[in-house]
Length: 143
Image: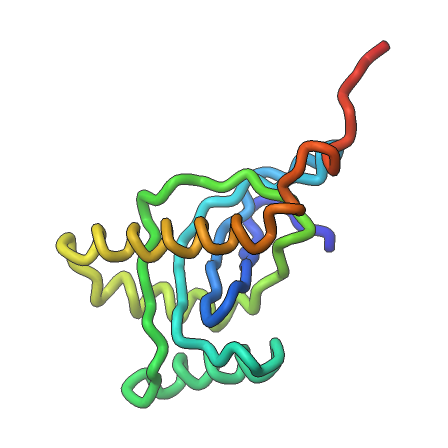
């Protein structure tokens, strides 16, 4: 995948999708510095990517009929993770959902949003621990 700064990317794990903005791509290390923005939970785990995307698109067009939970991740820590874990996002759906969650979020929900983010990161990390091993990262030895 080829990504550039400011592009919207996502990570999928279980029934969740975490959207993030690419801040910087570190090509020589195959890493992406990403700023989390939105977490969606309640996606069907056994369905493919297209079914999940269709469910997200349906939540945009008919939010009152959606069972998805949306969490605003503003203020959550940035991620510096392997680029190959990320996928390019459909920006139209992302921005529509982000606007919806920004309009409905309150200060009291920020703690809950961050706890959902922490749980996602912890579970993703445990499941994909092999992707974070230092042996995958190219050496910077300048000899």
